[in-house]
Length: 317
Image (cartoon, rainbow, N blue to C red; front, side):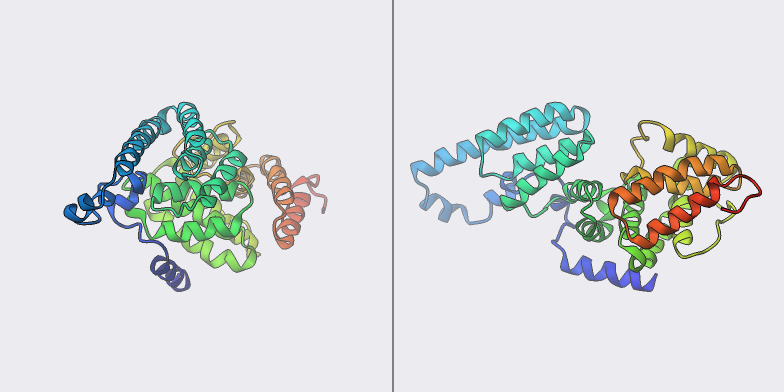
């Protein structure tokens, strides 16, 4: 935990200042009243030209359109996407429409499209003045195999939990950060364990409480520790986790991580109750590790466990 705290402090100091309410919001900086008041009014008026008035009017139109699209982002991401795509054609050099496209694709779970849009925003100079946009970037990176970029983003986000006053959101950030650290191989185990330990005390939702326990079990498995008896989740909670993981769609308040990691967490928790169920859940976990090109040690460890779980009762794998 001490090492993790040092990592968080270093990245908090080195990262962009996102701690103010303005920087925590998703409002584009060019639309901020701060930009308009950055210089004395007298000096600004003295240098105005007719072109300035035309430019200001155009920027006002852009800001209004961005605000309208932003309003649609949560409830109607497809509408926001259409609006942002149109803005990107009208303002090819601006990054803000690309950011809105990326965030809309993230909500639609179209992660390859989201990542492509984020690359377009970065090419146009976007540098994450918004903590909420940074989280969407981290999610898109994690879901597209950009593991180091995702972890770096989560390290910055962990220092900005005040941007998410809802404890459920904070839990998701800890779990997403821990999952990103796990994907770094053995070097990420301690950091992942630290994030999961921080998530544990605030876990009040039945599903998230058992998911935290499952992710901690996954850390233990990769450290070579025996599968734990369930300590922080009851049998009913374990089976609830299994049910949720197997559903086509996860609850909206759950963390966004590659699905095979959730299968692995659920498998480890359910094994004391059903080896057959554990094997059924572990198989897509192994397949996901193989597709993702995970650390070979993790993949071998996962295959060995699958052989053991799949062996006929009483027969050594």
